[in-house]
Each structure stands twice: as structure tokens, then as C-alpha cells.
Image (cartoon, rainbow over all chains, first blue to last red; front, side, top):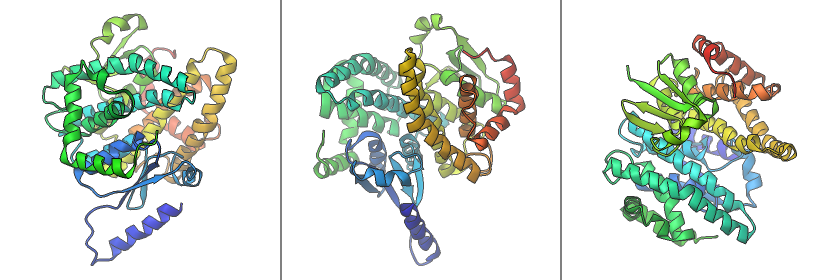
Length: 233
Length: 201
């Protein structure tokens, strides 16, 4: 538990050192370097949009066996907050979203934000099946099946919700982590795997993705990210 | 009092956790249950073609864990403060992962294949993560987070209450979890619910 001990020491030193001006927690987000986005990207987008500093720790698969025992559930992402550790990608994203005003303005909106984040979690789980397939021909077939069986109907459903909400955002009248989650997941498909054709009948979803992409803090993050971490697929 | 309606199949599945949170909290709700044969007509009314759905004053919320978290937060079962609530979310997600990863095992028809899948699931996920939960319960005085029961504890109860029907030995190496399950199960509201709940299937 070397990482935890180290950061717990720093945390307690900061607390006891009265002359130290300390307003922001020390955040370290740990994840694989490939897939580079996966289940950590939503939290990175939340940090970026909120303008909150964080250490974006990425490690290779060969380093993973050493890191694994230091995590609560032998999984990543994990978030270190002043040395304390939180696991589970959605718990991390939700914690940050709530802390930095990206979770919805009341309890019901927060529940809706949760719902959309859980939707994306389900889509990521479903996408993991073709992603993990080693045979390229079989993988292509599985991705195709995923697009027609899972993505197509989901796009129709979310387009309907966007139309119903009629604000340009998934929840309420302003940006939430729900919009960031949909941007993170669907922009991966557009930019990396399939092109934008599957959005041809979903103008509201397409416009939401474009709008999030163009937000100044998001743009700054993606430009930095793409130059520092070129796609490894 | 808000008018809650929970829509789900007449099964345990992903609907049981929201139901149990309502019961544990002593909050009345309409427990709308339907048979699989009725689902095709109802599906179109659900925002994402899925259930459970929570209906509140005409508004609809889907995703069982978003529903569970909402009800828990409304009724003091979500943990105190942001960090505790995040810890509760984390442990609840561990149970959700059991359900998601356990489903292909449960659905496999071929007994030989099922055995292989079960062994993989048990060794890679179920047993190691149950050990994490067990250690946390031992460290934290019998509940997962903070000083009282949270919906993460209720999620454990819902999962193991269901799992012990087909796998009665599942808690044999987890005395603290067994104690938690017994504690939640002895809650008066939960006891009353179990007396009238439709049989396991």
C-alpha cells in the first residue's frame, strides 16, 4: 500500500502545517494507457471542464500486476483524494460531478444525470465484448452487431429524450456530467471507429456532441490529450 | 408524500434492490409488476426500453442503480457527506458488477460450459471481491460505510438473499457478510415484505 501511505503522509503534513495555503485536494487518477479513454475519460472531462488540477497517471499493461494489489477491487480507474482511495469509475465520476457543479441542480436532476451515466456504463460493458475479440474478422462482425443491436435503438431513445427536454442538454437547462459521458462515448465512435453515419437521424445528439467538443475547457483538454497520447488502437 | 410507482417484471432481478430500499425505509410505493408476456407493449413507454423505471409525479427515471441511489438519498440511506456517499456508491457498484458478470453464467444452458463460466466468474470476481467486502465489514463494525446501514448494505442483502436460494453455501467463508444479511433480513419491514413477496423465480 505504498501509494496510500505516501499520500496519507502528505495529507497529514499539509493539515498540520498551518502556514501552508491549501484549498484544493490533491487528486491522482490512475488508469491504463490503453485503452486510453475507456472508463477514466469521463472523470478527466469533469476535471477539465471544472478547471480542477489532477494528476493523470497512466500505466502500461506490464506494470499492472504491481499496481493491482494496491487497488481496493483489483481494478482501475481509481481516484486518490489526499491519499484516500475511491474505486469504481461511476462512483468517481459522480463524486467529482457533485463536487464541481456538474451533477444537476436538484435531487431529481442528479438522479437523471446518474441514469445517463449508467446508460453509458452499460454501453461500455457491451462494447467491451467486441473490443476484447482478438480475431479481426470476428471483431468486425461483433462491432457491426453491436451497432445494429445496441447502439441504433439507444440513439433513437436518447434523441427522443433530448427532444423532450428541449434545452440542448440531456438534463435540465445546463451542462452536466451526463452530456460529458455521452460526448466521451459517442465521440470515440465518431472519431476512432465508425465515422458519424450512425448519427444521421439524430441531429440533437450530434449537435450536443459538437457543442461539448467546442467548449473551451474541453477543447483545451482534448487538444492536449491528443498530442500527448496519440491513439494506440 | 410523493406518489412513487416502481415498474418491473414480476421477478427479483434488477428491480429487487429499489423495492427493498423502499421497504427498509418504510416508504410506501406502488410495486407495479408485470409478466414477460406483457412486456412488448409496455417497453415503448419506458424511456430507454428497459425496466425498472421509477415513476414520480408523472416523471420517469430508468436505471436500477440511479433509482436506488435516488430513493436512498431521499430517505437518509446514502451515507453522510460526499466522500461517504462515494464510498457507498463504490460498494454498491461492486454488487452491481456481480449481477452483470454473473448473468452470462446464469444464462448459459449447457451445463459443462456453465461450469467453466462459473469457475471463471467465481475465481476472478466473486470470491476476491467478496473478500474485500468481508474485510471492510470487519474493519467498519458490521456495515460497509459510516455508522449505519446504507443502500450498499441493502444491495448486499438483496444479492445474497437471492443467491443463497441456488447457492446456499455462498456465505460460508464470509461470517461478517452473513451477519449483515441476517441483520437486514430481520428488519421488520423487510420481514413483512418477504412474507408477501411472490416466490423466487
